[in-house]
Image (cartoon, rainbow, N blue to C red; front, side, top):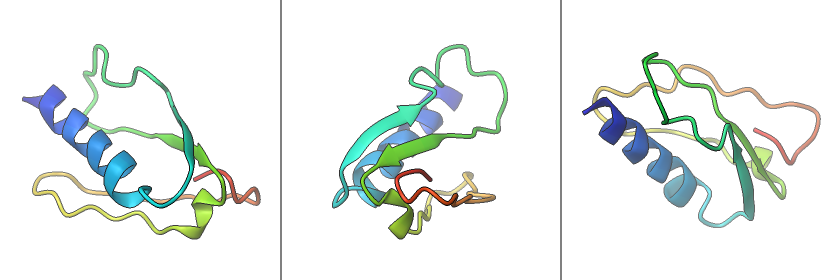
Length: 75
């Protein structure tokens, strides 16, 4: 069940929030493999990806923090 929720979250982030941006990479690439910790930190890379504001509307999943850095291509 936990893997399904994490995979669902990943799909929401990639396809829902970044659909209009050029998503190049999500790190770590295999974050779901052996997932035991209920918390997750992802690094998203794409052209001007930091212009977006990610949000989630999934029961039981909370986006605690979004960190924007000086480089607009990372979030």
